[in-house]
Amino acid sequence: MITVSKPDHDIKDVGLAAEGRRRTEWAERAMPVLRQLRERFARERPLAGRRLAACLHVTTETANLVVTLQAGGADVALCASNPLSTQDDVAAHLVRDHGIKVFAIKGEDHTTYYEHIRAALAHRPDITMDDGADLVGALHMIALNRLDDLAPPVRKWVETLSAAERKALVAGVAGSTEETTTGVIRLKAMAKDGVLQFPVIAVNDSDTKHLFDNRYGTGQSTLDGVIRATNMLIAGSTVVVAGYGWCGRGFALRARGAGANVLVTEIDPMKALEAQMDGYRVVPMAEAARVGDLFVTLTGNVEVIRVEHMRMMKDGAMLANSGHFNVEIDLEGLKKVARGPVAVRDFVEEWQLDGKKIFVLADGRLINLAAAEGHPASVMDMSFANQALAAEHVVRHAKTLAKDVHRIPAELDKEIARLKLQAMGVAIDTLTPAQKKYLASWDLGT
Ligand SMILES: NC(=O)c1ccc[n+]([C@@H]2O[C@H](COP(=O)([O-])OP(=O)(O)OC[C@H]3O[C@@H](n4cnc5c(N)ncnc54)[C@H](O)[C@@H]3O)[C@@H](O)[C@H]2O)c1
Image (tube, rainbow, N blue to C red):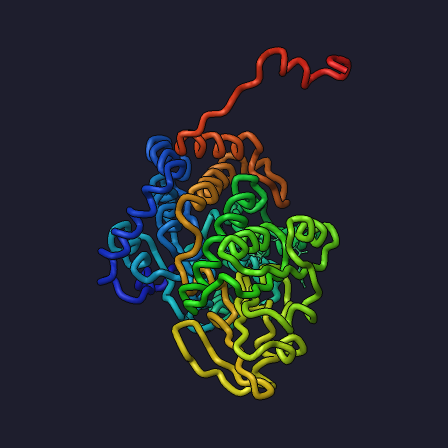
């Protein structure tokens, strides 16, 4: 029998709980859809008796999600999906006031990060909830017996389990949910290779997620993170946005709104064309590198800004990332050729390269979560309503869902939009019978 290690949490300081509670309640005010779901979950208990392991950014919004899952009857263990995104006061609040098993400390090192993932897996979840597929990734390395691909803290623990226990750990998972683009890409690759061990709901693929969270949430909070870290004046600066997907569009819009001259780099002709017609200058990174004051990567890809680009940059250029992993800026390459780093402010490190200074923000990790508070609660309201409904969907349909990556049903997605509009006091029209008939016909009104 696998047991959770004692104590059943690992956080910075439980004494921070009062502040975490105050801030979580503040976020809750802006999360009316999730609040309604919580009330229904408390009545219907759709997750009763389920063990749920979540690997998410430990923020005030996540606290509201976790408490909703608990109201639905789930026994929740929570670990961080990024070493820098944990809000320690929120972790303390969840432990002290709700008895959630939280394993997350802001600034935790690589070993502790994976020790916390191990603790979440040792919760023996029926359902996992990921933001970047770290839990599901580890479960698949276990299923495929690729133990060398596990981080040492997880590997060492798995090695203490019998073959039957390892099998039971993976077989025990009825299904999973995934929050972000990067996680969904990995899961789809697993499904394509025929190795996916259980069904996954791609929360990111809901319209009420990526159209709003990725675009408006990332747009605003990325700018917020850059400003909090650097206090730079955006107006009149040249901002280079790498990637014009949902996140890039949102960030470019906000940077332009703050008065920046925005350049976009892309690899996809359709997105590049869209950026050009949205009024941005589209150029290759090698060209943008010479003129940018601030560079922000939002691609979900690796080595988007490389040493060859850094060598071309102006003295004082700032580099940040808002894509999921810290692989978009080639920091390993920079370390080999530059002198540094010198910490000049919180979340700002100076590197000397070819007689110039360049500044890397938040170690190339998600700038909006490291230096700011992540997305505003109002937008996470919809993302996390999707998460809660996805967990319920997994439980209800575990026996019939194929081992594939699924979207949340369209009617649930629309219902979230309807509830959000209602909470915002926005009314819309309904189709008249004549309009319905017209839209269903091929021979009317031509
Ligand atoms: N910071 C946050 O809070 C937050 C929130 C949501 C998503 N994300 C992450 O942000 C990343 C982007 O997500 P998205 O939803 O915008 O994805 P997306 O697929 O909509 O957009 C990514 C874009 O990057 C482009 N791209 C890929 N490689 C490139 C390269 N080398 N140079 C320039 N452009 C390149 C793609 O063509 C695409 O248009 C993902 O890693 C996602 O997980 C972060």
